[in-house]
Amino acid sequence: MHQSEEELAHMADTAFRASISQLTAGLSPASLLLNYYDWALHMAMSPGKQMQLAELAGENWMRFQRYMAECALSHNGDQCEQPDSHDRRFMHEGWHHQPFNAFQQAFLLTQKWWNEATTDVRGVSEAHEKVVNFTARQLLDAAAPTNFVLTNPEILAKTVETGGRNLVDGWRNYMEDLRRILLKEKAPVSEEFQVGKTLAVTPGKVVYRNRLIELIQYAPTTDKVQPEPLMIVPAWIMKYYILDLSASNSMVKFLTDQGFTVFMISWLNPDAGDAELGMADYRKMGPMAALAEIQKITGASRVHGVGYCLGGTLLSITAAAMARDGDDRLASMTLLAAQMDFTEAGELTLFINESEVSFLEDMMWKHGYLDASQMSGAFQLLRSNDLIWSRLQHEYLMGERPGSSDLMAWNADSTRMPYRMHSEYLRHLFLDNDFAAGRFEVEGRSVTPHDINVPIFAVGTETDHVAPWRSAYKTGALTRSEEVTFVLTNGGHNAGVVSEPGHPHRHFRMGRIFANNHYTPAEEWAESAAEHEGSWWLAWVDWLRGQQSGEEIAPPKMGKAICDAPGTYVLVS
Image (cartoon, rainbow, N blue to C red; front, top):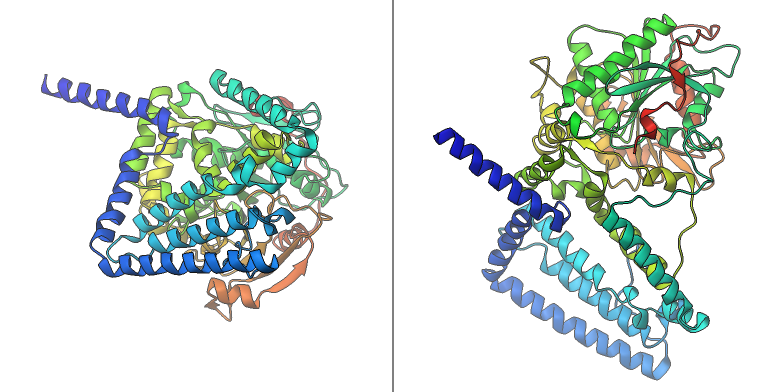
């Protein structure tokens, strides 16, 4: 009876927190309040810091008054503050003219003051300080003068020019989006970008299927191919065709045209019936099952693994377990914007603590999975100026819908994550960092990145908010691989990876992580690595060819086809 009462109490608590999560976009109120109280209480006990802030407020006020006086006399005063180099909100010429220059400078001075107020408060934990600073930035960004018609010169000029038509169009856009949110409908996809018609069209066959994956084998396009095939493991948080978008920027097509036999894992988009699928299931039914089938089809004794984002993490865990067990079927490993150590996983870690993870678990409990809409808020907050406020300005105030593209169509084609797998991933990797610490268990025994000893080609992107390049760079220090080549390319988590030859304004740095048998720290590596113009794909292909075991061969026969690529799992919404 006592046990039954405990279970009922636990279920009641879980149901209550699950209902609260619908109102907070999955963010734990308890976690946010703990962060705030830590900062507020220590601030209350820091009279010296308060005096500094009062002095800064007075100084900012005097600078602002001086600037306004200069503008009144000469119309060309020296600005008090300059926007950050990455801040594109104030690029319009109108921000240099009155009264909009006053709005801009007042905002930037306020932003500076709050940054000072939320940092370097003695006694506040580093984690709590980062959350409070991040939250303050979000609130300030919401109140920025760029977000309102009367304080944004670009929107005001558009309103005058169109006689207010932009606001009518913006209201229509807002109501369309609100209707879709309330009815839980997806935004319509342009006929120009349809999976299997214009996206994910590289010829191939689904040659294997289990409960969790479809394995696609792509048709060869050359008379001879490299002797060892490639197995690509994308992240299960995304549809695989980010690597097979349009014909002009498909990594898969590029690889087949370069003479490689390519296999791709396409993950199932899970539902409530898949709630109990865990990390072990994803490893067994994912890369391990695919590896066995690839060898069966091609007869190759070794395969080159390629992992993207979380797929790279899963591939790393798989490689470590294989190495631990003496399984040498992996010839090399390529990691695209992937991490093994999550101690410096960027601002995404702001949302990862015990309170937040347990809150997410309660939210997932209701449906058995985490829906894409439930996790998209955190990713949007990381780049709120670009993904939230810029959208508000252009779609709702300027009345302009953005043009569609293959990458945008893919980004809107979201997926879900099973309850158990996402819980294990957040706890064992993000929260406890078990893999890097050697505590992650596979088949009841621990594995560590240090078990891995195959050649590695790792790619990081300069502006990655999901897998920061310095975190991806740790691959060299964590493994036993003597040959670790690292590439740092411009672009973000997706655009930096989808960087086909001919893509304008692309450049990258490339070099070995170990020099003369000594590990090179990240910043030192970045200063000394050779810089190249163009796409890193060509350098990667040269590296892959260097890892092959022999001369080119005739293409292996295609496996028994279940259906044509892109398969059926990728079509599940």
